[in-house]
Length: 197
Ligand SMILES: O=P(O)(O)OC[C@H]1O[C@H](OP(=O)(O)OP(=O)(O)O)[C@H](O)[C@@H]1O
Ligand SMILES: O=C(O)c1cc(=O)[nH]c(=O)[nH]1
Ligand SMILES: [Mg+2]
Image (cartoon, rainbow, N blue to C red; front, side):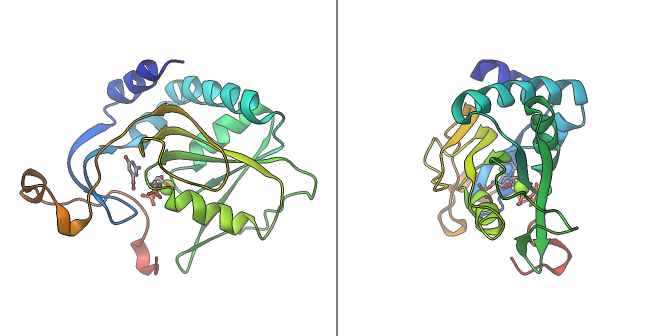
């Protein structure tokens, strides 16, 4: 699947939003990739995740476990795992920090791939990998549908993506005037329900 085909899937799903968005990192951006509009269509999600699984297998070899950060990573993690013949589990926030909960365990010899939906700064991916380090030393790499960092996000492990974009994001105190003029919206799950982070 080419980068243009990946972007076409997002565009056709109505997932390329324009406005003034507060990202999970606290940065502000005029563009938001609303992945849930992609994931509400299982056929579209299957196309994307089949391609991601093939790319991940080529880069990292056999994968036994896919681990994803909730909420956005769960659907692509599950669907990518299905194509890899792997198990799919997730970390979720407890008091703001990602934890492997619900009794999920990772066998000692399992080869683990972290799967994210979107990578912007890599903050969420690094938090997920830090949580995973308490359960396994066999994380072979990371994969995401879209890396919007322009390739600059450093996860500490190799990251592959279906598309790499360089989408502007600004600190809240350095907004261009056209962005500052729009009311900000925060679409993601970090910080809701009284969580600390
Ligand atoms: O690379 P980063 O700067 O961390 O940004 C990307 C993260 O932002 C989104 O999650 P968010 O915390 O908004 O919540 P969600 O997964 O519930 O959508 C997305 O799912 C990634 O996890
Ligand atoms: O950085 C984010 O929080 C983020 C950006 C984006 O385009 N999509 C998303 O779900 N989260
Ligand atoms: Mg997320």
